[in-house]
Amino acid sequence: MKNRNLHLYAFVIGLIGAGYLFGIVLAHNITLDQQQLLSQEIAQYLHMLQQPSSVDSPKFFTEFMAQLKWLLLIWGLGATVIGVPLSLVFIFLKGSILGFTTMMFIEQFSWKGLTISILATAPHNLLILPALVIVTVAAMQYSWRMIQQHVLQHKLVEKQLFVRYTNQAIIMVFVFIVAVVIKTYLSPTIVQWAATYVM
Image 1 (cartoon, helix red, strand yellow):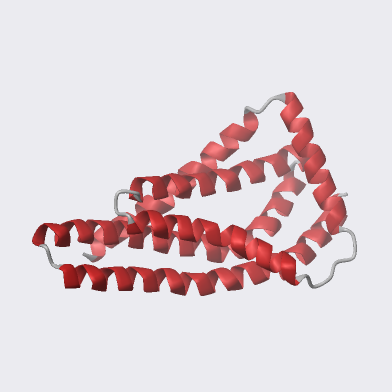
Image 2 (cartoon, one colour; image 1 turned 90 degrees about the horizontal axis):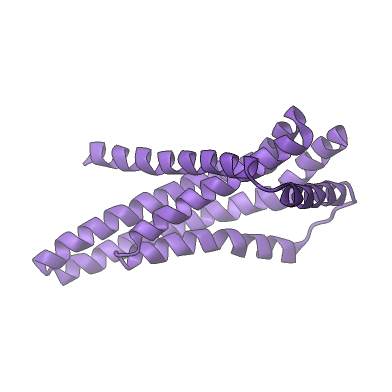
């Protein structure tokens, strides 16, 4: 069982890595007009960070809900059992977004862009990505066990599996809260310092 769990974790992590590489390739293949538009948005983002900032509760809530959607999507798809393959697509997409973002900063600011992208995305994603990996693996395990129990027609066991699966997702919600606190209140300060250095 432990070996199978390790294989699942390795598979999901590998899927994020593949998505990351895909995002890098995608960033290399956008049109010149698209690249210029994204460059303008990046410049506006960095200039915005250089303005005085304050604690913003609505901003925290908005960011939390945006991040929570990933968790809820994966949990919900796993709960349907047949939606697990689609949850793997979302994990791949998450990696693609990170890869695309990193490459766009590098295209815009060379190696300095790599520094900014790391400072902007790494702190909170060090919590978010492991949480998503855990929930995705839990979804895969849950769907497989549900199929087994459905064949055996053990309704009580199915309920216990669902409660256990949901509890894992709830624990990850608290991890997301910490991650969003970091992204909302700590990362902007770090990126602001890096933006000043680059600009």
